[in-house]
Length: 280
Image (tube, rainbow, N blue to C red; front, side):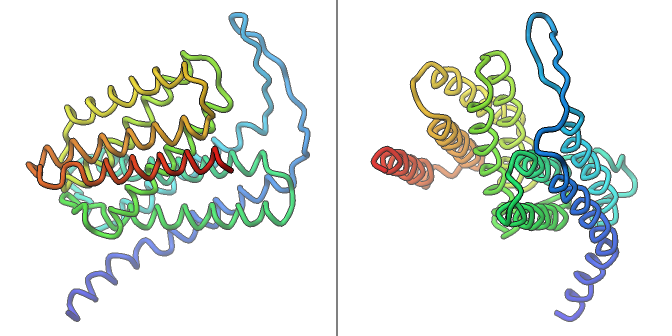
């Protein structure tokens, strides 16, 4: 027991300094949004008949995301579970994406939020969410992972929550079909990959990922033509994605006994939630 505690301590200590530096740098850059003007200067562009309004401030969230990418790589390669004989980037890329998406989403939210105490509340929540996600990614960075660990369960839940937020924001702001569907396809592909990878104990199942992405895309296309709100659109697609991931994982593991428990429970929850939102 003592030896195990010492090993865990040695595993986390090398990354603590780097992680603190990366988090502080991200916090500093996020705080810049509070001091930016409410209506920054913008430039209008017309490309192929489509009008775009561009502001240099809109690039800051992507700059912060770039810091997250570089900083995450710097921290993750200190993990002793990373093999030094192989290409390090290939090993840690899947663990970099989710923290980067987390900080990017909160940066986009902060840039649109009014400057008040609520702004600092979102700021704190964003940093906390990034810390939790990144710490979990660091802990599961190994050749064989288990989908039953608290870190794996947490990452699966957060990945689907971010997918929900992304789809709702995308549906509310984008009306063009050719932009909406590819965005949903890419987001569902990554969430499906991470979920199936974690629940299959580190095995890459490309066929099952493709099945889930096709299923989610078909629902996204069908729901696009229905008169439903962006919130309902996101809830239904997230339910489809979660259900698909759960089904293919259990089928791949040969577990048919509990095949319908999660899908039925989730379908009932989503139905009640949509009914409640309509009543309210």
